[in-house]
Image (tube, rainbow, N blue to C red; front, side):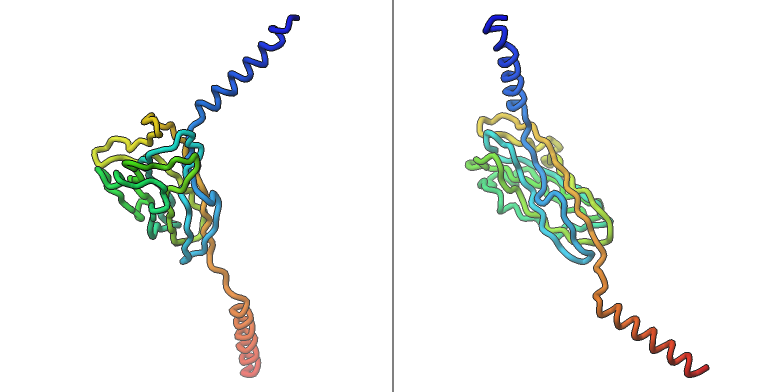
Length: 198
């Protein structure tokens, strides 16, 4: 077997690896991707971008959750590193807690976007309503006209996006130990009162 024939599988593997890296999509997800909050309590979850190899001028997003378990109290896009110069152009951002949706959140920039591969997009503040586990899922947002609010990179190419979900567990507020102790003393006192009457 000659030298070139031995190198052919290595070159084929290197080409396959290079093409898989080139076609890797950028990801939008949540930090933390798994968290807990008590009923009545609040928690902040970051919406983040990663693997944006050519930076981005931003775009639009929507987020969904279980409306019976969570309520979105607020969102803050000031953590996005871009100038947000186009964030309000043709976009109506809506929090719909009855449906469990934040629709058409925009972080579109005019002059300066997010030059790094990984960056913060927004901070979402949720309130726990009832016990259970809610999936948090991001998706591409839209303009008021119904067209997708796409994400573009610094070459003005459309970015293929993957969306990584998160889970948020809502737990009931545990009774403190003093409540259990008080309850047992109260029951003991009642049983003694019943014995004295008998």
